[in-house]
Image (cartoon, rainbow, N blue to C red; front, side):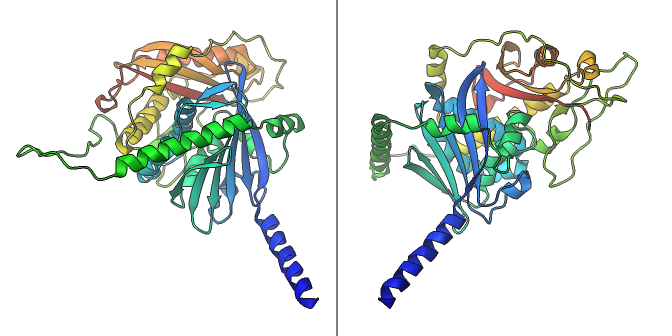
Length: 413
């Protein structure tokens, strides 16, 4: 009898430990593009916090979970947007050290994500391993203690998709009840789970077949191959430079433009914002009418994106460095509308910009608007003033390059 009680006590103790270690829902954020709901992101942590640094503690279990609302979502586009956020929220040395891991991570995303899909990224502090699963089916793992934080900074770092997005993830357990209900209602059907399982089995079979030894063909004499390297036309990663406040247009032609100061070593970038220093800060008025957003990319463009060349570590690093260069270039041309200052209007705008290989702007669309038309209009005009952009690096081998630009208009406290 005593032995049975002892076993029960041990089981209860183990259950208590497991419950204590289970990450708690810290915050939920809704991602919208073209005024349409795309997915909901949840950040889980062992300890609830409204501080980004606390959530980047590698000594506690954490989890990132994405639940898809859209009927379909290009997996690669979702991945590429995430990688853009990684590029502007991580230091250059971090990007360089994580380039190989980013290849592993990027290659896990195939085809399309569907409504109800659960993408889950879990971090285990005891092993330092980040595991990625889709609808509870394991896609892969990355064994690196710094990799999870590299992903997380894209959403809670100084340059998030929007300030509202980051603030909601830093909710310290306070989440919108309606959003939580939608989040919990999103579940994959049995057919979708079976489809993902079959896809993973097929990919594993292909990898095993590719790993089988094959006779090597005779190599021509005096032929050497070298791993491609970043050429001098892409500067080394100095992403902390993004942290300087957006340069405002001079009030008069005689006024010298502000200079950018180099960021100190090992300092994370500050938010990329357009700032002002008015003597008083009026209370915000009601939102004004905004211009309609551009329609999403059509199916043909989605398919074109799915056919992109396989990624390598050098390719990923080159894209991340180039993306940060494009953002720095854009931020120099942002002005805070005077009327918006006077009315105390603040907000975040996210644009989708397409340029050709020479850096000429060929298309601009609004992924996400602020509540105020003047801020939305200024974001579009800033991109127009910024053109032409730096030309696409030769090693990217892309006739056109598409990137997103998050712009936050915020008045000083």
